[in-house]
Length: 437
Ligand SMILES: Cc1cc2nc3c(=O)[nH]c(=O)nc-3n(C[C@H](O)[C@H](O)[C@H](O)COP(=O)(O)OP(=O)(O)OC[C@H]3O[C@@H](n4cnc5c(N)ncnc54)[C@H](O)[C@@H]3O)c2cc1C
Image (tube, rainbow, N blue to C red):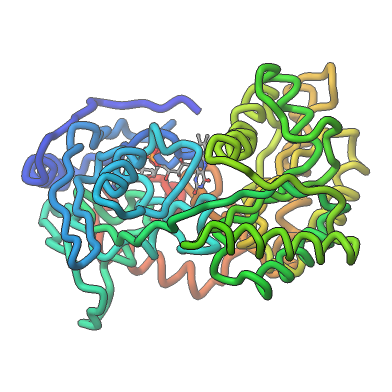
């Protein structure tokens, strides 16, 4: 997507953000908040309509404070996610949001999109890791919500409303973030499984046996390995022969020997009952990093191959095997696509991405793009899933939101937008399309 901008402003303080937004409110000029620009649904890219002000948070990048008593880190919205994690680590704590884009995305963008990532299974998404936000509202007023309270039931929760609002209700300028004690030891296992059904069964077994020690449970298809070999030849892959399906498990605990023994025991039991074909357990931190580098390199490999259509969907975990089998069958009935299905199996979120067959280009499939999307979304809808698990709606999915959402929800969302942003200046076109009210 290619955006347009009347002017790009990069203020350094919340008061300056407030002044800018107030002027835009008075002049009825649109404001597009811009974080790290890594969003995948075009929320930060305004392609058409009246030219907006692009409001970049990049210069608001300070850590404001740390309270170890409360386990809270307070930061400007423009701090990079990697720097938030680094500041927490320096204090002996963990900020448990982890995305492959963490070196570029900002915490304000993470909250605005309610980002997920690989540890949602253990810690929840961005919403669960935030105690309070400071924000500039569409009329230029400042919401001073940098709470350090873990409990606060005083009416409507504006923090929850702003999180996931994709810049349509205000500009997030600061956040108070929940920290946790990191596990003393972490171990990862790369596990070959026969198919997604057995992967889901293995998840159940792991939950029964090691419950809260599981931090991540990622599904990887053989196509992912194929794309990595094709685009990143130097990357070391874990298995000599790429498995058709594998899962990458991350587990943490305080006693390294006990943790290792529990993982070995659950994988041995899974092997005996046919859920697991082979497994590699990390023997060092660098081996664990190498496992995760494989997983985190898949989005880049996908980008280089170039998808015809990428879907970020969720279905109830138990329906994942049915989703994959039916979606594959329906799409491969249309054309011999290459499908790379991977993602956060532990929380039911799959990235189901469709690519041209070898030797052909994306444009060869232009006429099929809508059919691909509708085939996948209709199935997701039938299986009681979501057409956007963690990337948001942005500008790419506005029509899909209307089509697949509960009408009462859409009506309430429009009423909230009209009440908080009556002039429709905040990120015009995002979430609601061209007619917000
Ligand atoms: C390689 C790669 C891997 C990724 N992996 C994941 C993943 O695992 N999980 C996941 O959830 N996402 C993932 N993403 C998507 C993306 O990184 C997230 O959506 C991220 O949270 C966006 O943050 P950003 O700062 O880049 O926001 P931007 O892209 O700049 O903006 C995204 C949206 O938030 C709004 N916004 C930004 N900052 C503010 C603010 N301060 N106040 C109000 N609104 C604001 C924008 O207007 C826009 O609507 C990935 C992206 C890439 C490129």
